[in-house]
Image (tube, rainbow, N blue to C red; front, side):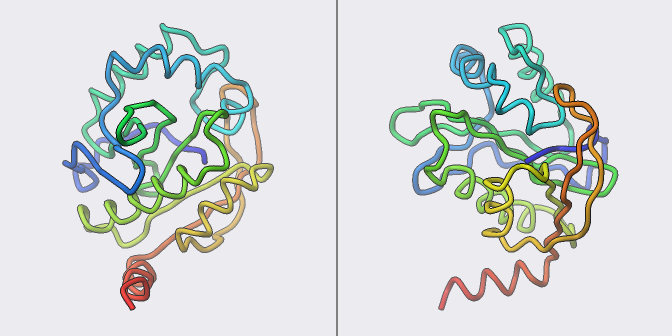
Length: 195
């Protein structure tokens, strides 16, 4: 999953929810004690190539800059994804403000791939976006070469909205697929789950 544009200051996207708990994850603000695990997982070219703003190599300086950025945000929100019970850091997810509106973004460290953590976090963030803001549409995008991210997006109910280009720090100009989920579809999906 990629986040495409720098954050804006649109207060209508501000979300005040410091912790989200799912079946297996505790999603909370990234903190200083995460730095070692963050560096270990983020210093991976396979991860960085799929994202817009993650540099490679990724060291302590990059981790500290990331923590500072998450603390200064006024709109959107970033979570450290940690395993419930152990507080093991497995990745990050968030809702970023872009020129198109609020966008879902996430990454999982390679040792934790194929366990459903991205889908679990994405479902929680989709619900959070529609419950805590007045947005009518939530956006997501992924590199065209990232089928795992595409599956997460589809599982959340997003619909294909076209292609575009993204400037990735690591990979340069790359093609992406764009997706959207409107409030009406989200409401229908949430109602289906309760039957």
